Amino acid sequence: MNAIKGQKIIGCLWAAILAGAFGMWAMQASYCGLAMLAAGVSCCLFLLCALGWSSALDGGLKEWSSPDAALGKRSLRWSRRHPWVAIALGVLGLRLALYVLAYWVDLGVNGYSGGLWDGLARLWLRTDSPSYLGIAENWYVTTGDARFHIVFFPLYPLCIRVVNWLLGNTFAAAMAVSNLFAVGSGILLYELAALDLPRRDALYTTALAMVFPGAMFLGAPMTESLFLFLCLGCVLLGRKGRFLLAALAAALAGFTRSVGVLLAVYLGVEMLVSLVRRPEKRLARVFGYLGCLLAACLGTLAYLGVNAAVTGDPFTFLTYQKEHWSQSLSLFFNTAAYQTEYLLNSLAAGETRMAWGLYIPNLVCGFGALGIMVPGIKKLRPGDGAFFLAYYGVAMGCTWLLSAPRYLAVCYPLALGLGALAQGKPAWLRWSLLGCMFLLQVGYTCLYILGFPVY
Image (cartoon, rainbow, N blue to C red):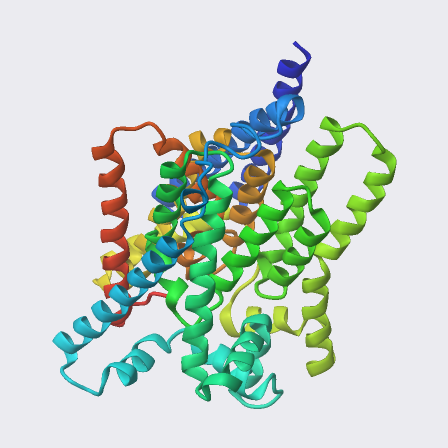
């Protein structure tokens, strides 16, 4: 009874917070009816996710070490417990297929314009990629257009610089780094999923993550594969109770992307579960855990230090984001509203490229993620669910969302939730889901190559 009462209290708090935020926003909003409806649906779906997380948190505090025991249902045979080579070949094979597809599409549309390697550079050095390569070659500067590079976090360019010493080509180094960490992400995701799922389902979860539409960027010269690798490393270490190492992985993620600091939310919830489940030396562990949470923020603090050292102001990146990209933090349901209104306006104006390249993918992925997690969040550990709520709220809550498919592709709880939901389903349904995801990824890649506004 106490547990049910506690869940009701938490649910009422979530409802009150979201209702209050939505009400205050709605009084000032001036969107069309469909846009307001989209915002309301987004808010309601997020509330359902939050209520599901509250239920999972209560279960975690009462009875959890792992849903299926500490090591899940993996085979005891080493070769079957760790199919790392097969995963690596699968990830690299998929990346190669996307590269060939991109070259073939460009060849068919624009004709021959150089060899395969030159074509790769021309096709994949787009959006943010040239900025990362510029940082890798010249570090941060304070003059010209390159001064805006300070908004991009430094760990990925530093990795490129290290590999460039071996390869002597910045683009080749960037592609090598991205593909290396894409392989590592696939392996770590399998190991994480295999803690709770049978081997077949863990492999299926990994395959799903690799064919999300925005996962095409895992093989591009951008931060996604490195960020996902560090997130999964943090979570896997946290699952094993190695919170200090997990915090260091979180710090590196925070030195890679701004949302990396949100891994502190995951760690905080997992630490809370650990304190409740294991009462021994609780006070000493509290102080140790607080130290780990501070360590998880070091990457973000280091990035602020880079801003201060280069520009004299630790928050220059915020100024540039607002002035140059019209980007600042907002409410996730406001994003659903303006994306819907922009979609309607673009269709009315005949701007189909904007509609299909930007607004439709953003809305489909934004609502799709919430739709997956309404039932899926109940099947995850409380820390994973908490990270999803924090990540979605921040990543989707910006004043000019350009890259929802890319952002959500590296939100690892989505893959875990979808994989858990698919467990036990008929083979035809599982393969159909995987095939549909792959076709969406192929289509999204084609839009990117054809010059649609895909970021």
